[in-house]
Image (cartoon, rainbow, N blue to C red; front, side, top):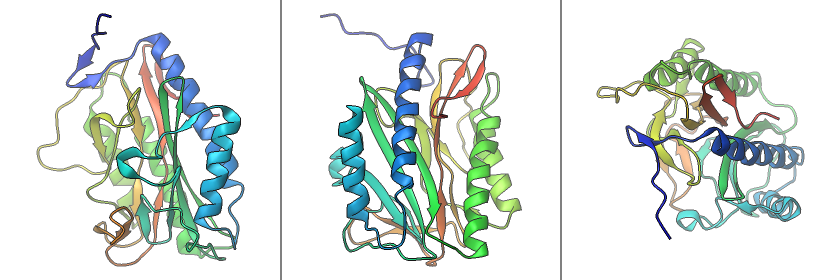
Length: 260
């Protein structure tokens, strides 16, 4: 069988209209499942409980969890509580209590295409700072999406997120980024939530599909990885929040593929 030649620009795989339609179905399905999972968040529920719900919903929808086994990850969903930024393990020892915030990062494979989305959920009544962090992080995602348009630059996305976050007194997580999305979970390019020296000069164009995901910290943007070699936490132990949507640039404008 002849190998399919992918159309690329600056290492970024460009998708056709038909491919974007399939990816859009995958992204929207993934978000639909994630929101059902998020509805179960309450004091007393554990990471393992949420992982079981995620696996059960994947079976119900006839899809595969994209994270399970990826790089050796043991769960179907990332379950990151309070100072945990991303890649939190969904264990039975991690039990939610009133006032916590939990970031749920979830991916699903739908007919060979991958959706990758995230939300941060308050557990019961949370502090004013925690709620503001959640709100600013969510809004920064949309600031990034607004900057995602044909003819613009990749750096515009990063700058829009960073400017909004910092103007609200928080900091973006350093060392982690959004990415391209498609048949692979992580495609080029990396999309940091901040601008840095040597940022690649990439012009955005139709056919590009991204998972944009601001990770925002209450305090320092510096992080470290716990001894489990997965869970990323803030260096100062302060709160972190995370939101993610999958977007596509088309001839008719930018669409949020994971919107439902």
